[in-house]
Image (cartoon, rainbow, N blue to C red; front, top):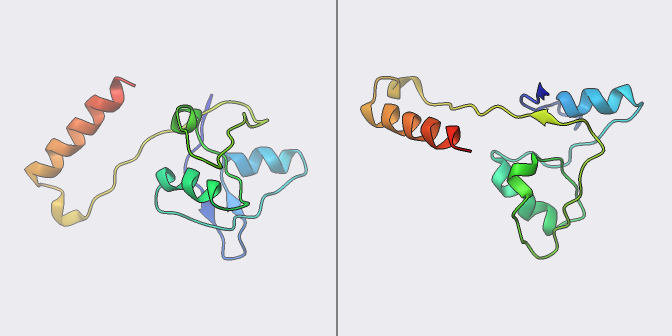
Length: 110
């Protein structure tokens, strides 16, 4: 498996990610119509529109949202890595350290 990394989107709607590389190798490309700050909103946007999305199976496997159809993508499996971001002023915050540790411990059990 390969890390899917982040999707970078140009103003013309073209993406640059592992999915885009796989599609390009097949002579295909996608047009990105919506960019959201979190993947958790993607299934709800897809269910309410005529858009499609590629998401990790762990995110969509147990979803039951009216209007949402989930099918396996014809792509090789990829591993998605989690990233945490915070403002530099909170770098030494005990609360930030506690939250990051809690997230790491929870994610390790998945």
